[in-house]
Figure 1 (cartoon, each protein chain N blue to C red):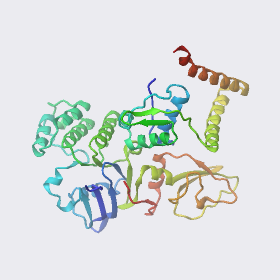
Figure 2 (cartoon, rainbow over the protein chains, first blue to last red; figure 1 turned 45 degrees about the vertical axis):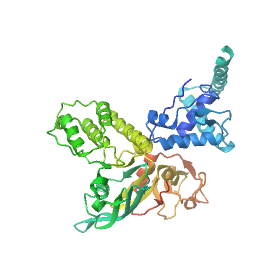
Figure 3 (cartoon, one colour; figure 1 turned 90 degrees about the vertical axis):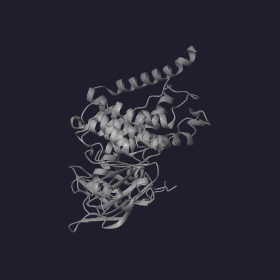
Figure 4 (cartoon, each protein chain N blue to C red; figure 1 turned 90 degrees about the horizontal axis):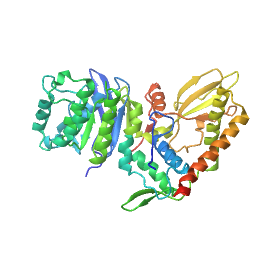
Length: 137
Length: 309
């Protein structure tokens, strides 16, 4: 599947970070798989209308960790390494997302049990979707 | 090759005893896009005019493509593109005539580039320049400037009065030419979200003085925001110039701080080491950081660094 990146300028998240996060997201949700090609720095910069050095910075971060790999003359591809956020970063980012989810739940009058059940269900659904295409092919 | 095609060295200009630009130094590395920021009257246009050799500096020097701006040779001038504030074009010409007029001055005029930009802005070649909309006028100006394939491009508030579509086209053109031809671009603007998109670095002026010159990333790392919750008495903060904004709310205080260059990302700046209070880092956008920085009174310079391209 093609990579789809949407960036928002003026956000509290720097643009390079938005690109990194969305490529990671595409991998963990199974939209991109190891070996899938990525657009070139130039092409993605032109497509998103952002400074090419910003894209280069995002690709640099992902290739240092092996999440994407460059093949000489052929471009960038999704690699086999999984993202490795350190424990404290993982905690902070998940905590802020959890807070947002709970706020929504309170706003909509949902119970804790309802929210937890929904999380389990959604999690299973995503894993299923990720496995899906492999089984068919 | 000269690796900083645009530079200013102690650039100063006085008008009737008032310093419009005062001792401003910066350098834009080859192939990079720099935004010139500052409130109205900060000295942006005066700086650009001195760079182009259109205005004599009172002191200091501006240099373009390795030559002092005071006496640029015609050959060097032909390698520089400039779009003046409000787009200086002859209203009585038709679009077609305007293009032919510009072409006559530049042997390297590229018709294909010109046509591509003219088409992107949906200009009708038979229309009179005076009848064009703001955005179309900017598009035409951009077309005739970019068609000369400039190595250095200087744009004075090119986004002024543009609708969102024209603004995006302008950004696309900037990204495209900085990538394809390694054009070095300096442009003045008030649109901070666009700066975040396309600029490598910023040059920030306030009342004629240089307040910051650094990469967009450095600026983001250095200007940070914190929340300090409190009950009863608000925390008393040290009287430090690096605390550029304080906003007191009922139960918390929001503080914007310029951190010293070496402060690691998660670390609290020492001015906020408050024994009796928790200090919580908050995310801040580039736009909010720049507004806090610009809104701060005084001509303190915190974020000026050497450009290493």
